[in-house]
Amino acid sequence: MRIGTIVLGSALAALPALTRAEEPAELASLAWLQGCWMQQAAERVVEEQWMAPRAGTMLGMSRTVRGDRLVAHESVLLRERGGRFEYAVSPSGQAPTVFTSISVGANRVVFENPTHDFPQRVAYVRDGSELRAWIEGVLNGQPRRVDYRYQRVGCNAD
Image (cartoon, rainbow, N blue to C red):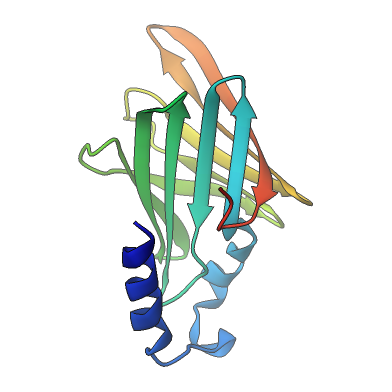
């Protein structure tokens, strides 16, 4: 796995660097998401990683591990469309579901897709070295919310 990372890192290093001026100003306002984040409780670890804004996109990924077993993973494509942000998430290999931003502020963003089964909303708030995230909506006729409290970690943490 480290060999692939080294090869990918070398290939990416050869690409021309983009400057801040080349990034869409709107997407750059979500750069506070970038980095590596982790939540750990007992045998369960949830990791989330966000790449910096580039070429009008941010890429995110996460995995949930219980003990030595992968229990969930997802990839996210975050992009600006028509003055709003789209959060296209593919959980555990499923087809993408798109959520659209409904609230954006300094260090916070809320996305919504009222037609999705669950969740209907996804949100992030950055507070220093903590990233709080949650999913919420109606499930089986009942309101439900799942909270995640991540701490910033090094992206090469073992």
